[in-house]
Amino acid sequence: MEYINYEKKLPVKKHYDIIVCGGGVAGVAASISAAKNGLSTLLLEKSNILGGLATLGLVNFFVPMCNGRGKQIIFGLAEKWLRLSAELGFDTIPEPWKNGEPKEKTDVRYFQRYSPAIFAYQLTNEIVKNGVDILFDCIACDPIMEGNICRGVVTESKGGTEFYSCSMLIDTTGDADLLRRGGVPTVTGENFFTFGAKMINLKNCQKACEAGDVRYIYEDFHAGNINLYGDHQPSDVPRWSGLNTEEVTDYIVRNHLLMLEKLKATDRRSREIITTPGMPQFRTTCHIKGDYSLKVSDAYRHFDDSVCAINDFDHRDHLFEVPFRCLTRQDYPNIITAGRSADGTGYGWDLIRVIPPAILTGQAAGEAACLALKTGKDVARVDIKALQNKLEAENVMIHFPDEYVPEDKTVEIHGKNAVVVEGGHM
Ligand SMILES: Cc1cc2nc3c(=O)[nH]c(=O)nc-3n(C[C@H](O)[C@H](O)[C@H](O)COP(=O)(O)OP(=O)(O)OC[C@H]3O[C@@H](n4cnc5c(N)ncnc54)[C@H](O)[C@@H]3O)c2cc1C
Image (cartoon, rainbow, N blue to C red; front, side):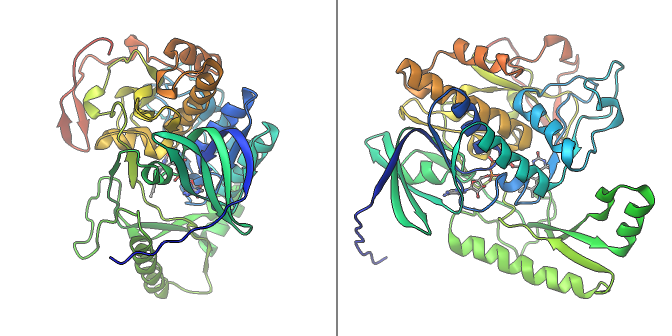
């Protein structure tokens, strides 16, 4: 490949204690947690809407936050936002969970399908209320590194190329953009043929009118429709990493053309696509090669440095804890990540990246960044007990109760057995 040199003198705009790159649910959670501690916090978001995949990407579903036996596992900011999303938008919280954890044992799980646009507006309100500085339509391009220390971030926006300095960087781009460009070791994933828009049609409008509930108007309308396990991925469609513009473009073009083909089979007077994904619906692009990687075999294991208990969203009973080390690297003193780019292996990555855990790891990253700055420690070396105390004060469950662990600890994921590592704390 041929190269050119391209030099620019950049205006130094401002210093922040903490810069959070990417305003998906993890980034919003991280920046709010940081700002609430009184540290100056800047959130950079390349689109014009907060929430990332959870809003712009039309993934408007808080996956179950319970063990499938009527016991709630995921609390903290994730639960707060699940409830928030039901205040002004659709409320689909199942009956047994309407007023909190049910008194009776139930197989009904605790989830919520919400209005993506209204939830995005609510996230903007949270940002404003908590004193986070935000820049929309602003791409975080490059971290400026001095060895393994990040001194700030180069941004690209309508105003041109600019520089913001910082004491701590949180990468919540979902794709580990800043980590990769800063030379932090990462792991690349692959993504299936998935593209879902929201359609309304006359039949659903009628149903909504009859029920007196507008939430029935939506119907998912897919081009590529491959599930998270990759079942039936067409052999002639690539598995994209999603980490370069050619792959992203190929994914978009294939899906748009397929949408047109599928629409031809419908009556154009009876339906309309009311919203189309504004970002690629890629699940697993890139994550930090962290100090620990969460695995399915960690089911039912307690970690001394757990920052939250989580449950498997797709299978009952399975319980996990997320070690703080999934977000950090000891050799990078002021860089941390959260959300989709936290470290997980195989289905372990799926467990850690979905909306409720992404919010909780964001919350943990924001708190940890503050703790590190206030105590003069590297972020990977903060006092774990102090971090856990802060999170518990925000109603996060750190360790799942042992009485929720079933007798049969076989962990079967999508029909395949996984070996569970027995035993205690780690
Ligand atoms: C098809 C599909 C279905 C899913 N279904 C569910 C489900 O039903 N329930 C569930 O809980 N989860 C589901 N998920 C997973 C879940 O939506 C995401 O894992 C989660 O929302 C990730 O949040 P995040 O904040 O880590 O990242 P993202 O949502 O990816 O947010 C990243 C943000 O960073 C911004 N950004 C990126 N690069 C830059 C940059 N360089 N500069 C500035 N900003 C940048 C983006 O615009 C975006 O706002 C699904 C995912 C997919 C793809």
